[in-house]
Amino acid sequence: MEFLLNRYRNLTVLLVVIAAQLLLLAYQVKSGQDVRLVRVWAVTAVTPLARILEVVRRNTIGLAEDYFDLIHVRDENNRVKKEADRLKMENQFLKTELSTADRAQALTAFQSRTPSRTIAARIIGNGTGMNSKDVLIDRGSGSGVMRGMAVVTPDGIVGRVLASYPTASQVLLITDPTFAAGVISEKNRVHGTLKGIGQSKCIIDYVQNEEKVDVGEVFYTSGDDRVFPKGLPVGITTVVRPGKTFKEIYVVPSGTQNGLEEVLVVVEGIHQEIPDAQAVPSTDVYIMPAPPGDKSSNAPTTDQPGSTLTTDADRLREKYKKIGAAQGHKFGEGLPGAKPANFNLDPDTVKPPAPPKAPGTDAAGRPAAPSAPVSKPPVLTNTAPPGATRPPPAGNAAAAAAPKPDAAKTAGASVAAPGLVPGGVSPQTASPVSGSTLNVAPKTVVPKIVKPAAATTQISPNL
Amino acid sequence: MNEFSDRLLTEVPRKARKFKFRPATIFLVPLAAILFQVYLPRFFQYLSYLELPLLVTVYFALMRRQPIAGVFFGAGIGLAQDSLSPNQPLGMFGIVKTLVGYFAASVSMRFDVDNPLIQFVLAFFFFFFHQFFYWVLSRALLGLQLDFDPRQTFVLGLLNAAVAVPLFMLLDKMKE
Image 1 (cartoon, each protein chain N blue to C red):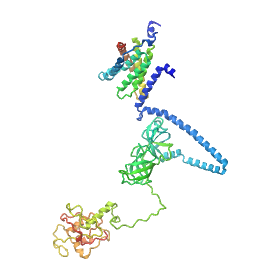
Image 2 (image 1 turned 60 degrees about the horizontal axis):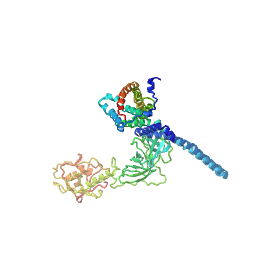
Image 3 (image 1 turned 180 degrees about the vertical axis):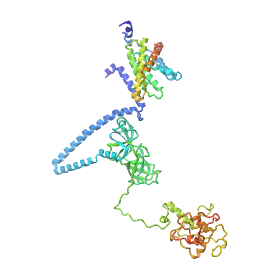
Image 4 (image 1 turned 90 degrees about the vertical axis):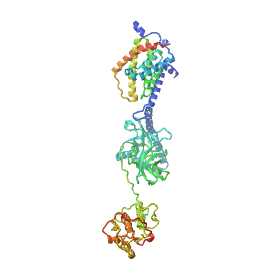
């Protein structure tokens, strides 16, 4: 060696200097896919060897394993013939099972099923980083694989191409801590971001605590990340618990659970629809029939024809309107500091306020000389269902029928509540002055809070 | 063999006739050549056709007559030129000039490089080699689709060779 170095010293120095500069050049220059040349050279030099080793391993160790299996079967056959027969049958059965569940067939079936264009690849090595979760596949830029392409199996997503070299590609698995992908849940279409945590599980982040995600729910790719086509299965939810800001959702990736040997690289992704969650038919669980309709204020009006009250907020608003109508309170009016309505009272039991005796009325409540600007009391456009209104008691009929400002005000405030007849002002009671439709309270009505204690008009029991 | 050929192929071992330069000369002359290459073409564009760093490399390699020295001359000057060239990865000029320095020093051991005609021919040859090999490296390593015009390179080689002869005479005065 020393002799050679001395004899060819000049050439050696030349080669060393050239090699050093080539390395320097390779370290700086990046290929068309933003990969440093030194990496391209290294991977190009290493991956053929890795592929050869993999082929040799398959053809030697695999054959050796088969050979030892045969010896084992033969020994068993010699010792226990029946047992051997059973093992042979079982072996045949397993071979049949294996042939039907062959991965290549599964990949081919998936390829023909999915609308995306994919190419099959074989995993030939793992990444060298201690914490990184990446693998090398035997398809590279020569096969059309580019950086950023999705890598999937029929069971779910596997990762994305981190770097593409001429003869191989580096795939970042979804379990890598730096991996992220947009996902969506199957049932409630909850969007989130899948992140690897360096373990076999992944987390789904950025899901609000208010969102509903169930254990066992399947997540699919949402297509938001522009890497994975929409509709590919991601994993099954195993843990869901509320976090500080977002839910803590753990999923088991479905694409990497059964071992990775062959994968598909999505070279041309096409979004798919996310399958609807199918209700599991439960034959073993007894489910009671739905409870009878609640006649309380919680679900009061959904049964009424034409009603659109479907949410809790709608029902709550309806309840408060009834309370206000029963107490003669009109929301949105009144000066600051005015006495509000008592919301603790049951609107079905509170009697509406007795209209105060208006000036210019006789003892029976009839108008002596109706000179007020409220010339026509309202006629409600939305009437209660049949049976919802009843004539008030005889003693209150006159007062209810009287076109008093407060009554008009109460009626006017109640018009906005469809399907309701406010306390005591039913179509029947308003009939003496029917013929006009009131949508807003007359402006001449002076706002006046009527105490419920003075109420004499009965509330319709169906309210 | 006539007298001319005797002068070209000298019988004296070239190692005995190698020249030495002051360290300051070895440092400052390439630096001046690189500065010339970098700054003067900004004001006189036609001067960009001169490859003074290459000529200086050829000169020092020829005069030292040591391939290893030629390698380091070429590498140093080339890397310095790379480092001062924007958007140029380090090593392109370095590799090319390393080869030029090596071959120039190797050639100097067989030819009388003090002869102006030999200097002219060598300067032309190494300019052409430099330009061609740089083009090859650019296509092979960087994937750049550069054009190589042999006719233009030929003319520029003659121009640089013409400049090289008086330049080498000037640099001869700095020998120890």
